[in-house]
Amino acid sequence: MVKAIRVHQPGGPEALVMEDVELPAPAVDEVQIRQRAIGVNYIDIYRRTGAYPADYPFIPGHEGAGDVIAVGKNVKSFKVGERVAYVGALGGYAQARNIAAHSVIHLPKAFSYEQGAVMMLKGLTAQYLLRKTFKVKKGHRVLVHAGAGGVGQILCQWANGLGARVIATVGSPDKAKIAEAAGARHTILYREENFVERVRELTKGKLCDVVYDGVGRATFPESLDCLKPFGMFVSFGSASGPIEAFDIGLLALKGSLYATRPSLFTHIARRRDYEEMMDDLLHAAKQGFVSLGEPARFPLADAAKAHAALESRATSGSMVLIP
Image 1 (cartoon, rainbow, N blue to C red):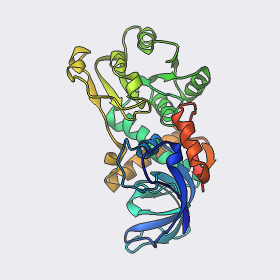
Image 2 (tube, rainbow, N blue to C red; image 1 turned 180 degrees about the vertical axis):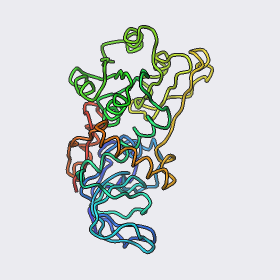
Image 3 (spheres, rainbow, N blue to C red; image 1 turned 90 degrees about the vertical axis):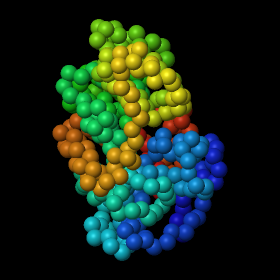
Image 4 (cartoon, rainbow, N blue to C red; image 1 turned 135 degrees about the horizontal axis):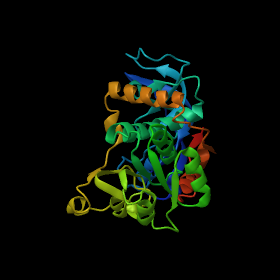
């Protein structure tokens, strides 16, 4: 038996209930991990509220880090005692878990368990956004919404390292300092300023090549007005609520724009792609483009408090649960 957080029906943070659950031996092609740190992400909130479907009851959580304590048949790449991290199927909010070996990577010694737990989903999300969805290069003008958030900070760091001019929207002066420290050349207090007007001012009317938006409803369709002709709007989250259906003709009216809604799990479905993306992320960290820092920590039993803090949008950076 292990302690785990389960959700029995859609709801608020109170829907997260700690229970004893059976943990069977790892199946064929699985590894069993004693978890040292578990990443907390907005996708966990979407699962909890029912915005993203799941079969009830379920254990939330898609990323974490820890030690291999058992391996199933056919597993050759991992051994008991090795430090690992993963991003993959639900089941993360637990003291220990089983997960497919193809979702797991060896955790380099240079990274703590806490860093390993948060670099997977957030770091790989930033990787595909910057390096695949829209290939950011020197001289590009990039708008990052929620630049002080977990993914937002990595986007600011990495885009700045690639030579882009980064503009970030934030919710407070304190968050502006965080985004600027991460690499944003300019910050916009979206609660006090019209971010479209400020983008026009900051770019002298040239606007942006790409907008990265993990906020959703609160920033759309205004984000389209921040793009130059043929620019790309990239939606990768909906912290303020989902973007509702819109007239696709808007993209033509606002400058023959491109819009996309990619997903990390599509990008890492093939092991080869997953490994290449991970190598690129680790290389960016070695170059100093990405600095993960140490995330805020909550005990596993306080998962509801962690969700409430994240949902309030009063937090900055990453957070983990410690079993």
